[in-house]
Image (cartoon, rainbow, N blue to C red; front, side, top):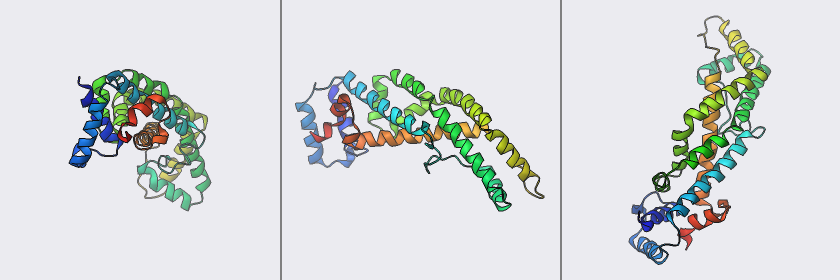
Amino acid sequence: MNKNWIIVPIILLMTGCSSQAQFGKTKLGKILGQVQEQSGALSENEIANGLKEALKVGIGNGSAEASRTDGYLKNEYIKILFPPDAQKVENTLRQIGLGDEVDRFVLSLNRAAEDAAKKSKPIFIKAITSMTINDAVGILRGPDDAATNYLKRTTNEELYDTFFPVVDSTLNLNQATRYYADLVNTYNKIPFVQKVNPDLKQYATQKAMDGLYFLIAQEEKKIREDPAARVTDILKRVFARAGQ
């Protein structure tokens, strides 16, 4: 595989452009000249290792953020709320004076997600270890969340299987399952309302995973765009090409 062909997409991505067409001819010619001058400076393995290192950094930061206390609850982008088909349950219960019970349930729901996130890192590391050179090239040529999408494809099933029992256990420990069942059953007793299914676990597990993937995508974007986020030598070597 030609090393120059691999290095070019790295430079293009790290300057914030999604395709070569976004560069003017002069700019592109300058970059190609720099690549020619520095051909062989990085091996294909170093390039792949740089991407893997970026993912490890992003995963470490994302999982740490998600698993800390209030990592979900205090983040408006990933906070887990009532299931969509139960939003009317929340509104109605608040109207009849059960707001504290609703808040207690939401707290327990997010605590379950935070507990589950603690189990995520080994699963992601396994996916990174299995990444091929072709995988790496595809990710480097892709959009800002290409690596995160790769992780979704390769970890989703195992992550769900790992998250579900943790969410289930924590929901039971925090009595969130009972809170939710009680709340929904109270709502279902209100005359003329459409009944809601009180089952919660699958929804909570998927939302916990969605929030974690969101945080990792944010970390990936940061590493691509912000030199200060490149905290290891290999990250600086691979992702600093555009500035040379």
